[in-house]
Image (tube, rainbow, N blue to C red; front, side, top):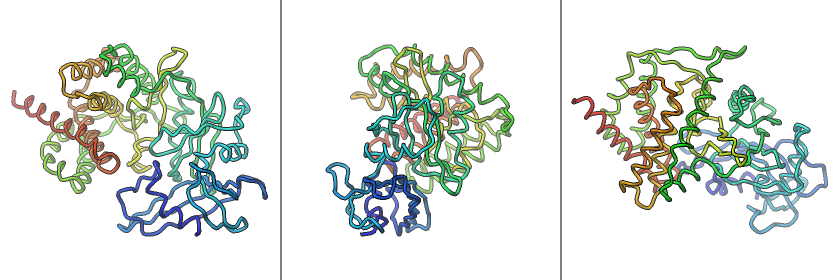
Length: 420
């Protein structure tokens, strides 16, 4: 069996594969040069996998594949036939420490990074794969590289001295000029925001202090990204009607896919149209901000914000487009609601009060005394919740009720405000 045939079957099992709800018509594997010397085992190389769907869509995935003479329990994905190697055991190098050590040794990395002999796959991401390759560094393998998709590298470079983002130690690229991997600082932490907040909510621990601190960290990032550079004008202004059109465009996509959103479309459009007459300040933002994108440093030096790629279901062009910082704020507020939804009794008075207090503290820390644009923030919260309904429907159907309840609750609240 050719490796491409194997991946046709294997893809739906991969955490980073985004097309689980689609029918794969064909896959085409393009092998790139070997990262290991001839005769070395495991033999490791980068591969590009073009996935063609029955609905006519296509996606390209980046693989780092390892091949061995003999399989290893827990690592071997399939037995395949490879030119020059014969019948060999295929594994994903990002989950295979020895294979990834060989791959990392072939990459140009900052001398500050002393590579470990056995890297540690982290296995915590949805759309990419991260491997800790040294005490101070991790290697993020980008699974869906696209030309023009260097967003995270560019933003982290701009934020290098902010104190709240990881440093960059190296990068890898395809022959077509697409970013395929980033070597960045490993942040030693006591946990990410989701873990810490979920635990605090479960135990009834006050989280207002960390939430406010997280709001201030996000504000610092936004202030840096709002500042002009040689390649970026920083803050610009767009018409509110343009934002409304974009929100309604995304809503239309959701309506076509989700009957439960179609039933609420009219009320959602009314919320989006409420911002049409107000100009909106925009600049580069995080783009997919939630509690899992923040690590609390083990040295007690506060939060570090990570994963600046943007929303995984959004095109590269949309990710690179400047947006309002209030989109990131909405993402954080939604994330605290997910913490509530993950509790054993999510609708209890105590859990609801905990989530509301954390949201209020985060918002106060972020706003720092400035006026909050309520209508704009509401529109972004609803847009994010609709996106989450789409995402959960495809990936975690058992979680769909969390964002769907928010859409319903927010719309009920909006109607009450309008009727006052």
